[in-house]
Image (cartoon, rainbow, N blue to C red):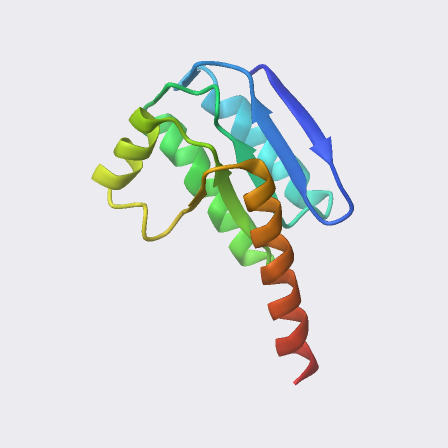
Length: 124
């Protein structure tokens, strides 16, 4: 899978540089996601601005990312999904589970906001 990886202090941004997130690309993405989670990155943003097609394997990779982040008290966000991918997520009724935002910067803002909320809850 061709992707740019940007590691920040409390999150990682994965920019997928392929037009398809399918059974060929999804296994590599799953491997990377598990590796990042094991390395302590519990907040993950996937920039899907270049992905024009996803299949069930691609959706599975996104669900794995969501589960990994959730189980480690983190946040998973899909940034800039193309219309076809967004429709697939909606048709699959995963839009109530997955967080989708229009831009990477909004995804980072969402992570920061949820980090503050978690910190406040832990202080109580």
